[in-house]
Amino acid sequence: MSRKLISAIVALGLSATAAVAEYPTKEIQGIIQWGAGGSTDTVMRSVTPHAEKILGGSIVMQNMTGGVGAIALNHVANGDADGYQLLMGAENPLLYKVMGLGDKDYNDFTPINILARGTPILVAGPDAPFNTYPEMLEYIAAHPNEVRFGSTGPGGLPSVVTAMIRSTTDLPVIFVPYDGDGPALTALQGGAIDVMPAVLGASVEGIRAGTMKPLALFDTAASPALPDVPAITDTNPEFNAMLPWGPFFGVFVKKGTPDDVVAKLSAAYAEASKAPDFVELMNGRGFTMMGISGQEAQDFLTGWQQTTAWLMQDAGLTKKSPEEFGIERKK
Image (cartoon, rainbow, N blue to C red; front, side, top):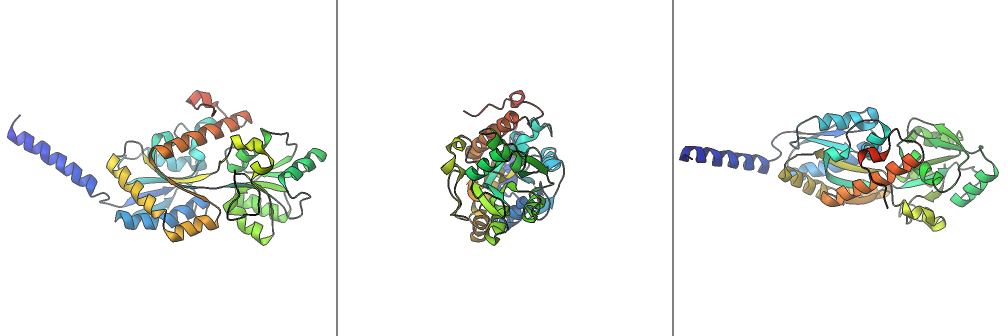
């Protein structure tokens, strides 16, 4: 091999190393799966300015809605694996395959950071004739098909929590569909429905204001945000096998992104997630901080998908069996 050729190869290698070391050299796009003002949007716009400072670059965030988040996911999946497009998403993609919403999920991505998870809670209208989860079951058994349960369609938190309940007991209620948690909680406070599974962060202010009342926190321990509300496992230990569970927020890049770029982004978001104002925001909304990446994040995603996909399958809410995609039933 000639000296000129060797020199050219060395120069090319040095150039590539420098390019990675200098990342980011241009503007980064942050594609948010959901619309402005929602939980995912709020979380990402709160943590990302801190990550920008650590990276020394600019991250321009864009809301890209539609297809239960699939449009944003496919947009990033079809782009370059270079770290200049971040997918800022929630849990929904892990159900796309079984719900027939798409052929891609987070297996096509590398997790940069799973920032936090929400905690489900079952809330009732202030005038509901029951105050706890066991009292609700007793009332429903004595008054079948009278209690109105809010829902938001298959795959969302309300449907998963409802599937958990129905896996342990009969639930003869009237399901009333709404286009999102916000409208459903508004309906609950107005008396149009009686009960609603929701995320703690979206309902905590209503609970504190007395416009709705908590029946049970769907977790294995009480939350500092509402310490007097019991965990569902305190009264119904059968839920231990399914919990903790909840919607989550994460930052992802397309699989194949250079390891050095992934490491830089992961370090930036890990540090950003510790910012006092971000932690205060998350704690105030009842979110559980996670801040995980690498194999720990991969294991979390796998476990979440196994638990949820099979819950939905057993409830008859899936379009395709998890078995078709190699999603094992969690033991």
